[in-house]
Figure 1 (spheres, rainbow, N blue to C red):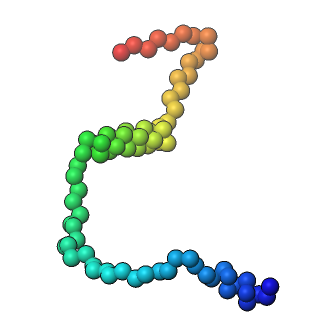
Figure 2: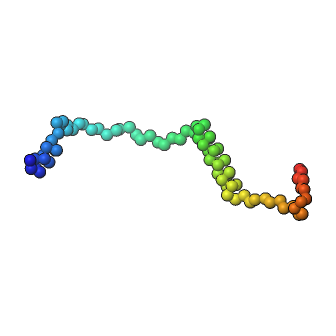
Figure 3: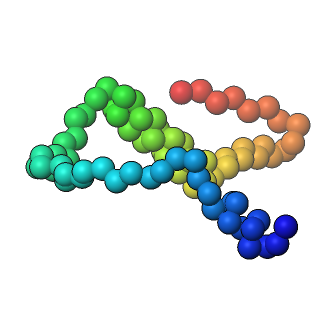
Length: 78
C-alpha cells in the first residue's frame, strides 16, 4: 500500500457535509443589567472583613509589658 492510498483512505468520510440556511439573529442585543442579590452582599461583607483582618495582621505592632524587677507582679485593671 502506498502513501497516497493510505492518505486517501484517511480522508474518506461516510457522511456528506450538507450546508444549511443561516439567518443571523435579528433580536437587539440585551443591555447589561445588574441585579443586586443577597449573595453579593454576603461576598462583599466577607471581602471587607477579610481585608480589615489582613490589614490588621500586617500592620499591628506587638505590645510588650516589661516589669522591673522581674520578680514583681503587675495588675492591669480598667
